[in-house]
Image 1 (cartoon, rainbow, N blue to C red):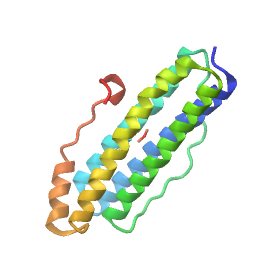
Image 2: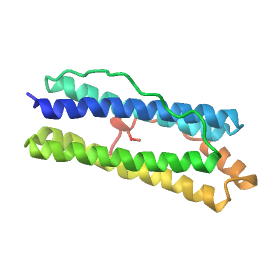
Image 3: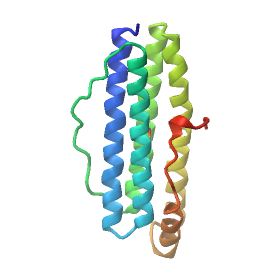
Image 4: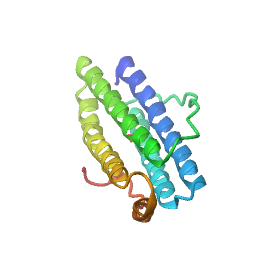
Amino acid sequence: MISKKVEETINKQINAELWSAYLYLSMSAYYASIGLSGFANWMRVQWQEEVAHSLKFFDYLIERGGNPILAQIADVPKKWDNPLQAFEEVQKHEQHVTALINNLMDVAIEEKDHATKSMLQWFVDEQVEEEANAQAIVDNLRLVGGKGDGLLLLDRELKLRVFVDPTTSAKP
Ligand code: FEO
């Protein structure tokens, strides 16, 4: 049986992952609105990834005899100043998610919950990848000055991203 403290913290994380999904879907709409369909595609795939993350926590809670609580999802931003600024926000947001996962790990350690620690290790590794992906695109955007032909080339590249459920494939 899972402790109340771990259960509550996982429930908060389910909400945080779903909020991340909303954020990226909102960014997908933003990029589509400025004609960057490749960036819009990347964000749409990211939305699917975040839903998969939330489901991994959801299923784990049920497996351990806990109850997933689907709380209200707060509003997400709808507008950004430019393509680079939106992606810088992705990078910042993923750093925030890493901090949340680390906090969850701290709670599991305090509660001597070895099963949750083991499950969370997957997310610790996943966050390394999440931050690196965002960093690489921010770096590319800065290199091309966030505009012009370089931006269009990058857009073409991001159009190729397809969703592969990270929770069912080997890590990372
Ligand atoms: Fe679920 Fe992008 O971290």
